Length: 385
Image 1 (cartoon, rainbow, N blue to C red):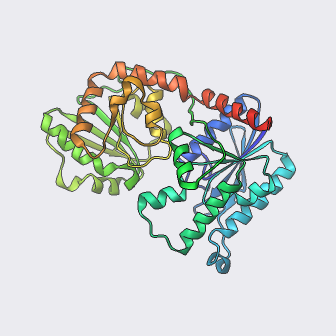
Image 2 (cartoon, one colour):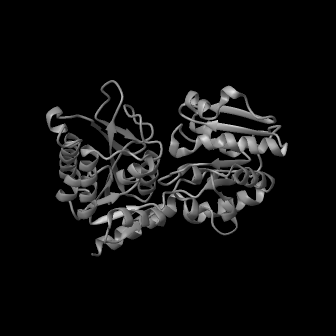
Image 3 (spheres, rainbow, N blue to C red):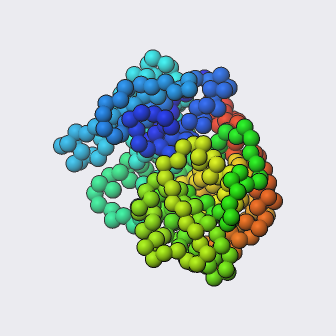
């Protein structure tokens, strides 16, 4: 079969700056489909300076770059109207050349409406974060522009024939926010199995290491980490908190670095790590701490599971689906630092057992092959209707 995916980004694409999470999903599903003999094209939004080529080939996937452009006068009445039109025309042209079996478009404030009208039998609406969720979480004042975007997003859900998301909790949220009457299909994101992994620490350290990965964004909860450090300091245990972020300066401010660190606590703030360095970060950590307030999915929760590194996380995104059974005791309230510190301490002490349990959850539900199996299964059910 031939697939077209439309999303925010794709790894290794020149001329784009977004897509660390969404881009990883598209990459993984394309590579999985290619391995099964299918064909994949991708459309991503071009960002940043310069004029990169309109098409790139990356590991067997043809990636088309779509420029953000505007009609200044019409934009005042219909935000992103040019993007809706530009995407529609590009998909029409590509489909005329390729005759795609399926066209999956990330739900982005109703940007898929034109394509849904043109190809109602082919378009799958993939839902990550919605505008309604962001308005609610960030308490954004609703002006006419937000009302227009919400209307377009709701309209997109109304006309969508196939809606797919990544967790049962997110599906329930969509039904509540948008009164979706039809079925919402759940296909959890998956990532490829590493060639090898080890439950023993890859890089010896004098202190246990707590790894935290996230942007300096209220949603990621980095500001919750400082109280957890202080709770650790009260126990007298020496711990290294390693934070990997895209904005070290802002992250340092959120951690109140200017006040110095609590006694016995070492802090490392890193950015710009290569994929190989990220892999070593996961392997060498004693535990990964995920203090987020909101998460659409939470790829950084699946990644430690891939390497058998324990996870302590708040109840967001995929966490309740991942931390099941004996692992549920490591779901914490991020606003209770003593509870978080105790869970991290227990995870460090029982690293090997917890790592084995988490790795088993990953292999059962969150591998790339598992995602492809689930995805092709629902497509088969779509085609039979």
